[in-house]
Image 1 (cartoon, each protein chain N blue to C red):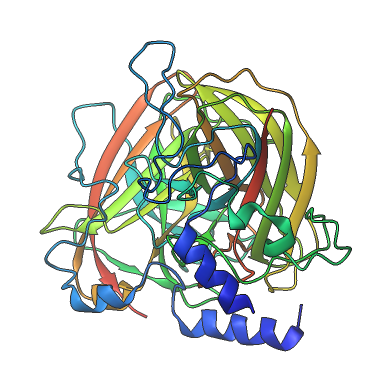
Image 2: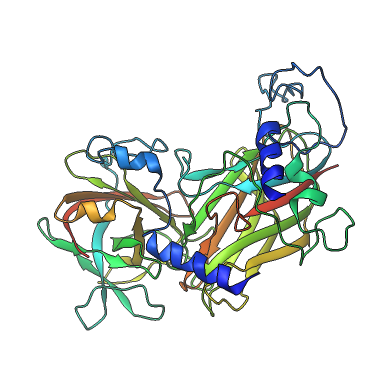
Length: 240
Length: 198
């Protein structure tokens, strides 16, 4: 059954909007949502950005992917051909929805799905202060409600700080943060937090940035393990 | 989660060496031709900015290379032009060079906040000396501590080599360091060394 879901996911690509807009079946992939002009008039919302109201699941790209010049890896957020909700954002499909309420909750594990473009590779954070960064573009403001789902390879004693920022003109607004000091067992147990963070002031073109930092030098890595698997890292953000 | 599955996963990671970066396509690429990731193809260089020096990391008082075990007292050791640098193996099989950086006249950071934006940001880029473009990178905000008089050191900076680590043994490598403190003070430097096993 999971394979079938993965196949559907592959065929559809994914998106997270909730307006249910429909377009002709021959519509261009990723072209369902109109571009959004930024305040300077020159900004066009990228295809994989955060846009449209609703909850968006953003996958952290693996270490084997290509970072930008500043070594920042993308957050993957793909859109459906028809602009409808993405299969990967549908918790009734994405997780083992134990209570069958259709909404992911801590304790419910993801099924081995994931975006086709997700690349394997864990991010080793070796030494105190070592960090990895992931980003995407915001085309809408978001709330401060954030979920971290970050499987990791760590040991007892490790402490890692996960921080989510909105970056505007180089200035970072901290939205939410959490320290993973959970006892490790060198497994891929996920660090899961639902946080009511600070509601940022974001404008189209701002950057959503996740920074994970090793605080004390104990072994820690952010997992993205051979997708599609349940060892993928993602966050959830909400567009009001 | 099925513990057996977890164990198998961990084993697979250990066997994969580095566990990241390698793809089937990588096998077809001669790393000598163009090993730089597309992310940053800038040459590894340093202009005439105030200097930072790249050294190796030693466990204080022992002469031993740093290993990555938390708690070891790490110190900066100056690197000679023809020195050898030994890679260490991480717990999952990744090879890495343990480097250190020395500079002066910067804000050293907040000793209580390893993730503080007040800590200097250090960017280390490593490549083959004859190519000069990046094959591995470290970014972090380590705390700088007093070293020799007037100097500030950060030791124990782990540059992780992905699946290509084994191919580097015997190669002459170039490493470039850039340091930016909270006030925007910039330092840079480069060093070369010969990569040694495992």
